[in-house]
Image 1: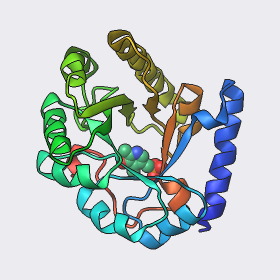
Image 2: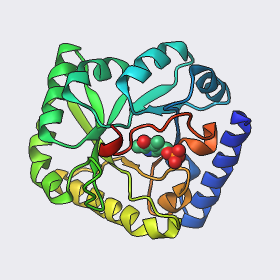
Image 3: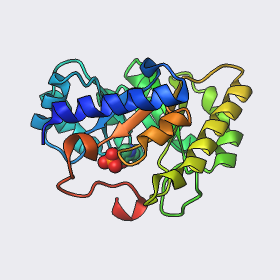
Length: 236
Ligand SMILES: *Cc1c(COP(=O)(O)O)cnc(C)c1O
């Protein structure tokens, strides 16, 4: 497993997908999803030029982040419980997990106490799966104004984890749906939102074709995870 080689290969594939979609390759950021991988591997990735990392457990990230110097940014991409918000605000540069007004209010409160403003993404349950976290689209649209009124939150865009499908092409409609929802949010805010976080190891090229600005790649960079991290309610 050569992490630097893996990253270089993924960057090439990102450039290829951008080319096919007529997009600037600089318009897509690569996140390395380092959950369930040790700090040593993350440092290798940072040395290979990776600047953005994603973790889905606050406890795990708290231990790992201080062991990985080099100025990389860290995003939280899991389900955030309100009792973990205080630490999450301390350790992360962005929280890609806002799926209720209640959680947003807690982040707002803790960010204020920490004297900072926090970039967030709204997580959408694009397929309405009972097993997944994330806003139902209608609920999100209803709460947009209240979310936007929270002074310590900066809404940068949307994030989704579409249903697992064995044929990546089957995920395309979900990516489209998320892109369309982003446009509706932009209409409602009257300003563009920069971020659409979608696409993982199995489908990031398709996600780029559908407008992704941030792909979250774990397995293809770091290899199989030693234990299964929580992606759904059952596993948490
Ligand atoms: C684990 C995880 C990923 C990465 O998945 P891979 O298939 O290993 O690339 C991306 N996004 C989220 C939210 C995850 O939990």
